[in-house]
Length: 410
Image (cartoon, rainbow, N blue to C red; front, side, top):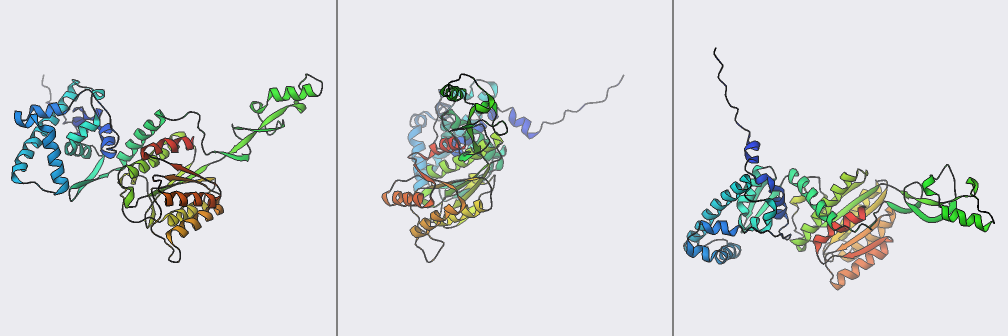
């Protein structure tokens, strides 16, 4: 009896990568690359893996050599031959240590909880970026002078949005309320303080206030409840929200500030999707120009240019003018305007004039300040006053903004 020969089908690249164990920590490494200001801790020291593959004299002063190499590249963009040789030795040791670390993850010799993702990225930055690019999180890496610019994919945005929302929910104040509850009266699950006669065509039984009904009955000399004598709490009206997030991307927003703003946008968009509330989020990046950011592109925002707050508010007003529902505008900036789209108005005057025009669309203006310089604070107070319906908030740490926007959404 003969049997036909069988051939083993080669595994796809994704299956091969999944065996490497790196997928267990890929999303956390991605977040550490995007937000280097978020620091975590772990019991396992990855630098010990690197030192194993170095000569004793190099291993002894590993931290010093690493620091010197970073400073040389940052300051001059190049190294002398002496330092190049030593740097090459460390690079080779890191490559061996990286393969060893992946092997340990694959075999289960080390767990995700034992690692500090911040430390892994600090020591294996190039290796991590290469792996993330293979996994589809990084589109390309652009080298500019002594720094590298990472261009993320839409897949990375989706993953990071989930991560950021998870972090914000950990610290969310459960007593907070969102923007959906308005001062209007109507139909919803939210009850107001207003006592009205019970109407079976308007109110549900949940709206009936038994205590107030009994008090009203007792005041008439009776302890008896008839339907035509009951009172209820008038429910408040709830409606769809249209959020417009204006993110300052001028030069001064580099670093922690723009990371905090991007996290806030990611977090709010993911919260809206998860709630299925039908709300909208429109993200506008502005400097001396303003343009809407499409989904999948927000991670690649760069800070450059001047600041035109008036132009940003004008763009928000235009969006809300054609929308229905409650308009909520988050204006995120770190300093006073330095540019005006209107050649006949100063940057200050332009910002104030556009803030006053926000009354035309009946929007709630939430002014988010990443700076507290005197003139900027004065401008923001005046904008809030002129808009008619505004609040002013200052964040000393921009990374806390994501918690705030989620609480406002709730």
